[in-house]
Image 1 (cartoon, helix red, strand yellow):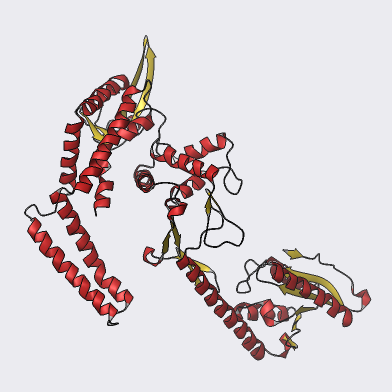
Image 2: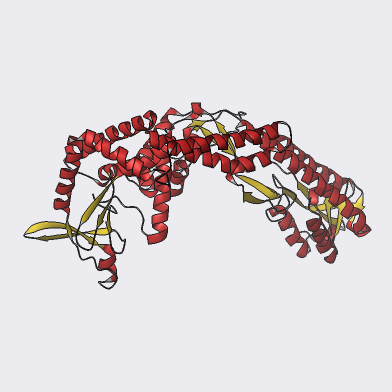
Length: 519
């Protein structure tokens, strides 16, 4: 802020004690030169008219549509109440305010203090009456509104072209460049590590921040890493080569209130050259984020990977995670029991099952080993599970019926497109009329793919099984099995009241991703 110290003087000089107010709306060099010119103008003006300039208030880079953040303006109004000056000089009406309401309130407050407000360019005073000044203020407000519209239009055009952010970790941006970034190879490696930590090693955002801070790594703004900074990276689609603009817009230029836009109003531009993380890893990260957010909402418990079975074992009765208990008497015992029952008592949960950690590990290793030893059998089971999960809703539905429905739906969509091409309907009407058609077409095409057992889907399942078996081999070969390793192969372990241990494979939950691709 440009701030000049207020000089409180006595009236011994006999000169009229005046103040001057200046403002520019941006901090660009040409605007700051304008601000300096305004200051020099008032110093010369005061000397020429034998005034005593007791204070010069100057706001830099501040909008004239609202008073809240104009510190120098608010300081001037405070000094007016203290009687520091008799008159305020402003070069023109728009410098005082571009909001009619704020303008009128300001000059009325000054008048109530017997302080005149004079506008040099218009050669007018607040004592000359409000009508003309109000008209001038309204003109200034309308100019601001038109400027806001032009800025919005420019931003929309840039958004459609794919304007990139100024400062984002993993990329460099040249000065004066609006639409291009270059990958920062050093930072890109850290980004890949962050996703790997989160997706494959089971670390939460806070834990990842701690690991990076321990290494002395800093963010793009040269700050320490935080949970929020990690979460921002994990959710940024720029890392898969998608530039998204138009997520928010200004609802009212006078208040500056911003609102979130519907995803349909976002501008998405694909820039594959900016890809740092592949789509599969990014999708897994989003699924994990959603799952952990929902789990925390329901249980108020955060993800943990401290021990091998942390938050992996769930109680089949109350739904709480099993907790680890350690005891050493003659020999060491590490066991797991329901945390809900442990914390809230037997009336809360009837599951009294206690699991020995070593016994469970051995049983899981034996089970996983049987899966790897018969990979062809596992592949058949996975294909069967896929068809079971994503079979058509109606069991009797036939391939012939689906083909007939697809032909009907595509014909209906084609008619809507033809109506748009001859200007019978608008693009908005076209989108509205074809949205349900597109959804139905996608549904039937997926059902057809499932019935036929398409080659592409089967090859994806085969690749998924091979990767999964590789993860199992890593678990079986490890001397110490940690939480991150188990999470690659196990979705969850449910322990029933009867003591039955049910293992849910990560393989089958990953089928959802193949289902999404098939659609």
